[in-house]
Length: 169
Image 1 (cartoon, helix red, strand yellow):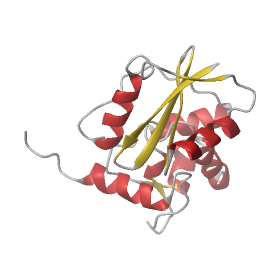
Image 2 (cartoon, rainbow, N blue to C red; image 1 turned 135 degrees about the horizontal axis):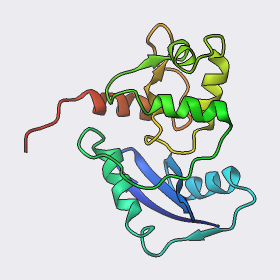
Image 3 (cartoon, one colour; image 1 turned 135 degrees about the vertical axis):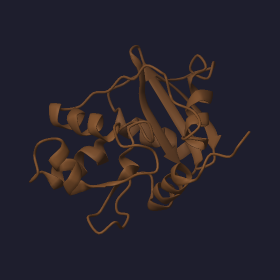
Image 4 (cartoon, rainbow, N blue to C red; image 1 turned 45 degrees about the horizontal axis):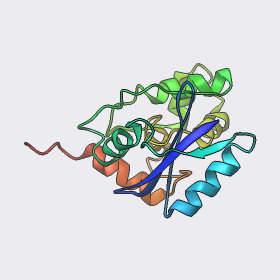
């Protein structure tokens, strides 16, 4: 069973879904219907239920994190499922500071398998937690942006936002 809620964020719309262990998916999209369809495709065997309580307050925290990633950490329980290799890649991604990037080749070296560049890209593509597992911080070896499940424009916007200095309050 996955409970989910959808709201606006400054990248369009966001869907957050949680199972009994915590957030299991964060999807970005252009409209609520496409997000719901993506959820059905991503979790074909799950029972999906709309949350009436913003996922016990998790959705507003996710929106704040997306809208201001350098100002707010996301201290929520996560439910991450993947292969051992994928989990190593996702853990390495979470060590990249906001506003910085690494290449797919660098990330492959970090996880101890320098020839696994395509597998690293596959692990990034399999990421179910947009922004929280920051696969948007991975770029091509020449520094150019490439592939992002939620769109290159969103990837660019996230990187620009993370690199921007924090405004004084």
